[in-house]
Image (cartoon, rainbow, N blue to C red; front, side):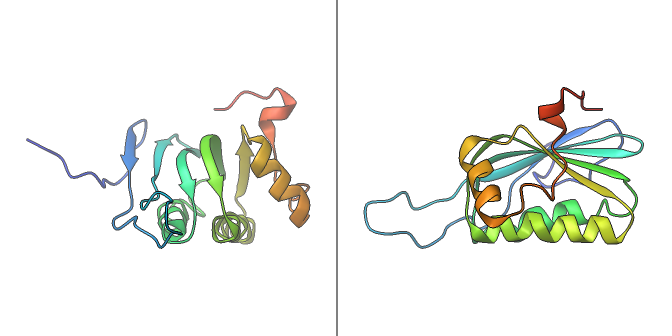
Length: 142
């Protein structure tokens, strides 16, 4: 039996989720698709969301929709950005929106394994100090 690609996340399970319709307009000569996917590990009081690919316009709402369902149930949501290769302003806005939603509901959104380019973007926009970055402090993820 083949399972659908988009599944509800259950305790202790991993599921890879990909948005539908990930095509976006690009300049001539550039790649025509934007690949973005997440893998969610659900723990009793936390959710770890591993992001892969490009968090850009056209796929940013996918991240918000999938992560928002864990707020306020999860008191701790960790976005692991190890395999995130690019983030544009729409992706950054989505992460900021998730932060505000989590904070308003009494949850905590943390970013870990932030790449150099994304770190620079957070610094330029003044958002670097807003996010909790546990990866740099040697704290182990759940």
